[in-house]
Image (tube, rainbow, N blue to C red; front, side):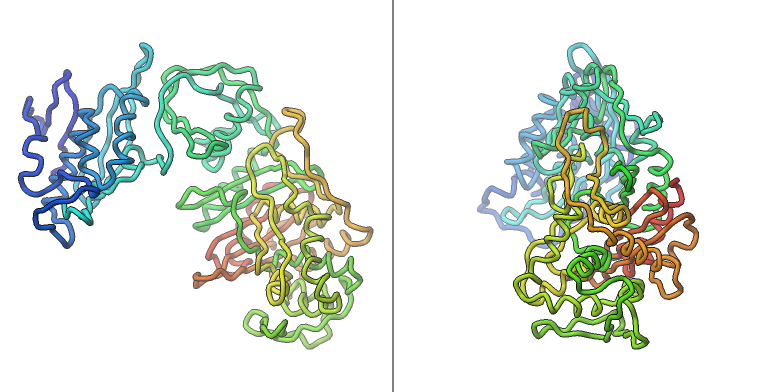
Length: 551
């Protein structure tokens, strides 16, 4: 396909412009199947010989050109017929004009890269006398139809707009909620342009609280979420509404640090909370799938879970921070061996605190044996829920996964003590765990004031006397001791501090997930770098960046 080809509607007449030369009313859709290219969704059958093999350059050029021409002309029937899924592409292409109210479209394709064809859309959106231009870029892929053998556009909603996902649709009209001007706890305005990680959060806050902030709705083009509880995403504003002011608990300085932190590593997420209140100070992600893993991930937290396991050991009278433990290179539980990293051991009379600092797996499995099978299988889950608030339906003001430590059996029980097995967490959960450990009381994280909608916060029992001090001592030793796995990452962090590293092995992944949680003064943060390796190597620097911005 040649660069610089424009396909669109000019003065109500379909035209193709190549290098500035107009071909007037020449209809590129004539002879749709002349060369055996295009013409026929993959759902139909044919008596002709079915072509096989990769699509050719000519097929890619012809099919993409015809599809883009039909789309630009507003001929959804023809355009959808050139895709491998008429059932889904037809309504989507029809809605482009009928629901999104696009009245004109000029599409400029670029050079094909293999079977992919990028293009720029210059559209005009009109609604109730209001008109505005709309420009964006996307791409399509040409594939061989499985049943027809025809070259067809591989239909995905992103063909229509790059932000569209399955089950979503475009719409233009009066916005369903008023816009918001979100501010941090100091009154500083927060925008998705300055803080990209907040984009989906600000959309969600607008959907939930836009009607409670005194603003008025405007006219917009947006993406309807596929999830009934999800937030719509505004793509274009034709008439600005009056935004209402929404106070959040976020801190612009700490959020900026979180944005910088996650840029250090791909597939990374971090959350910071204020231990004394539960206020969320920052949430950031850097992921190629745009998934908000900081609050939605459901993955094993690795050895960061030893914070909860240590509390369980202490509360059940199985040891304390300074009691001696055994740390062999491996231990067998119900016939399954568990190993320390690189099979290290500690033979110099280690304490629980030192084993915690060096992240000795076996030292957090062996002490639990005396509990007996029945209690062992539930002890960690009871500790996590009753004292750390895990899984207690947090009402933060935005949607979150609140962690899960289900009952386990046999080897899975031992695995759970070191943050594997069925245990599922995300950075928000682990930041809260750390905050609870050092203050002795679970304070449910939140991002907007409770009285905004009078929601009920989750509660948990305070940790028994003496337990928080021991946990804080263990975390501190891990962050300052020469043998602590978190010492290097926390070296630049000042104040009263502590941390815990973690690495979680994931089935099918060659490299473990990197976890790190820590605190400095009245700020706790936790980070996850999926496939990042050792906790101190990847997640550690992310957390340190955030803590350095704290009080």
